[in-house]
Image 1 (cartoon, rainbow, N blue to C red):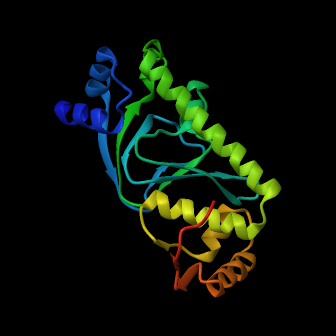
Image 2: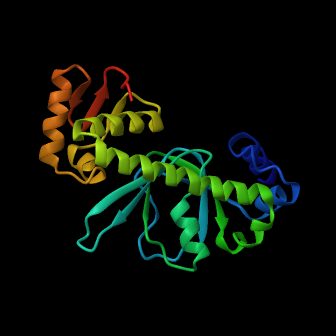
Length: 216
């Protein structure tokens, strides 16, 4: 297994080069696979491991006081979860829900080593780049809400979703899109039907196929 983990690090996390860090990950990381729809982490749970995603995509969600969900971001191959890092470093329970969007393979890193490994430059850079990526996505989301019409947001969302899953056909309901974009199912359905009339998408039962790349 150590040899396999070293191969995984070289292929999917090539910036982690420090010999002692690599040895630490090889010794303590746990290789895991989870199926589509599986819950990796839930709101209020104790965070025991930090995921380093090898293949597949994980959706990270927050919930407001009324139980309404808001999609925050996706964790893709070669990445880890910024909110998980924040909570474990602050010794807080999870503030997010993480769900596998497809079959996911990952390395689970025990949180006990988060502080210790900050002495390694490669690990510090990996953590800081994770925060930078999420911050840039936050700014982009704010710009989208402030300056883009909802139909632009829907098209951008579908394109990013398709790219993250490496597919042209997305398996999800109008209600799921509405939740992620903090809108209503009726609004999303109307926009999708308009997009279908324009030849941008083809709609099926809980399926949306992108017919041409979006110019974003």
